[in-house]
Length: 232
Image (cartoon, rainbow, N blue to C red; front, side, top):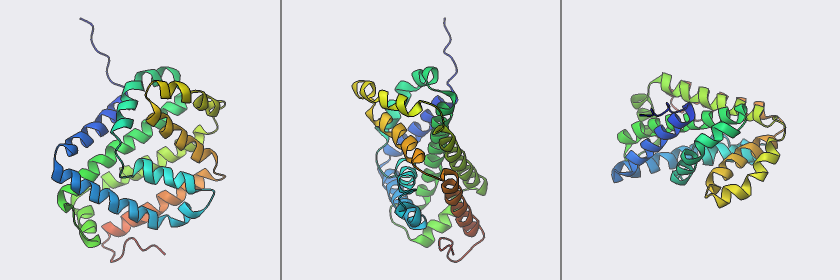
């Protein structure tokens, strides 16, 4: 009997994120709590990084992080698209591009797990103080530190990816076949991440700003700061 090959790192992360979302979807109370949490976090991120969202050079990249990686919209179609096409992607995509997608899905899987842990404590209605207490109580500092490491890795991967010759043309040529194959959601995700970073003049400075602010907020929360989100 032919044995099934071990899943790749990309396939493992895709499966982990999908299973986390599916488990939450089967529990209406948990799903409601997770939606409330994601809505709160998206609003907080928009406040913290308002200048990056407002600046023409960084607006698209900030929106990509906010909506594609921390958004509240349903990602089930993107999950399905990615799992369908993952074996093909591993054969045809440049190593740098595959690494970037894997980093994004690794971050996605971890974020889903951390969100579920907090949502179980918070429920669908909570205050900012409740959120801060749950952040400290539900999550080990190492988990949050790992999340920031993955944000950093993804940002650096995207910064390098835009330098790969002909990748922009390759993505454009994929639009038609992706649409015909029912992979429009995936194509939009890939193009959006690539194009938003390609347009930036200082992509690494953008990544450093995002990670630096989030690191400062994390440190302030665990240190018991009275207003951890109010950075100077």
